[in-house]
Length: 307
Image 1 (cartoon, rainbow, N blue to C red):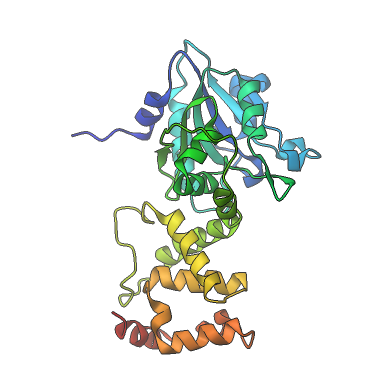
Image 2 (image 1 turned 180 degrees about the vertical axis):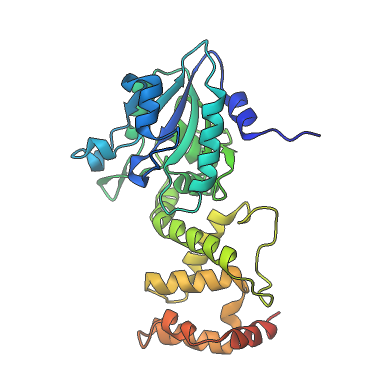
């Protein structure tokens, strides 16, 4: 059986009676030489094919706002080579905290309607205060979908197909579901608050897997992809658990979460680690500083005593 290529997946997502779009975020930065860089897309399709997605929090800096790129209009098909280039860039983009390539979209709505809709649905109200939450960012979309498929589909709006790169950079389709809500739930908004730290933890997790070969780390993911398929929600849960254990420093939360993900899921049950967490929670010394003093032999001994 021949598995579909990324290009096949994207082509199949496009309804030929609709527009097909690429959503990119200049805030993340992009290599000038890639075909999906804004200037190269403008040179290929014309400036009119790049529609600004206005961010309420960046009204003073239009150049930093996302761009909705019209890859094809109704009745036409997108350029296969460009789709392939976008999929390849998504793979290499996966290791960064901020992702340039956000989504591929199919919609019957014209560019300005889609762009304004994406932006408008990012404006949410919590505690009577309006704020802008960039749900279109891949990590945020993964968290939104994992928290509530109804909320994810509320954000989708009139977009018939929404595909985004997951934590491994692989193209993932936003699952469809009916929703009767008129606003994103408080639970989803609460989860979204941790999105920047989830992105940082995912990046550190990737770097650790690539650079470390610890034979005594039973929690180490050994599947066909660099990170497990549910890496984003795993990262969120680890950070939440670290906070629940009393770790208030973001650095300590990241350090503990990374060790737990990479070494052992019940690392905190070891007396030595539990004592280190208590000292950090009490503000005596950071968990990061304490863990820096643990040798590989000490970690191997700690892990060996855990179930």
